[in-house]
Picture 1 (cartoon, rainbow, N blue to C red):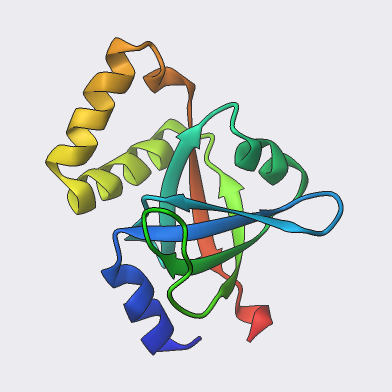
Picture 2 (picture 1 turned 60 degrees about the vertical axis):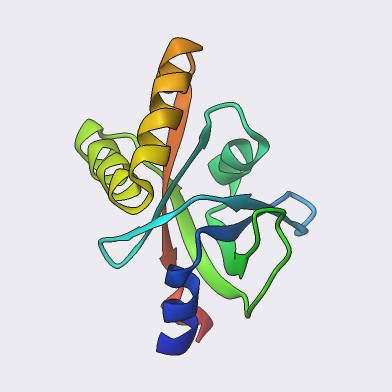
Length: 132
């Protein structure tokens, strides 16, 4: 695994998270992410397209990007999995709160007020060692 690529990825506030469609095409989305347990945690609305695609395919790609999704570095092959266990979700949320601090707490409060907090999906993404 390229440690320079991982270091550049982790310095950013956003990562382009691309999930695979049935056609084989990858759909990228800029998301917040936090390192943890040898991979990365991220979250999404539970009914988002990326979550639906992950139910079919675990293949994913990560790349550093801007808030608008413009890729700013090399892509990294990865495997992504929806978190189901409460302890895994708590670990993901804690990692995101450590990285984004008050911003994540504010987003949580707004999501709770809108009734969307409990409908979030949490995802663990790990670099794919088989991809080189």
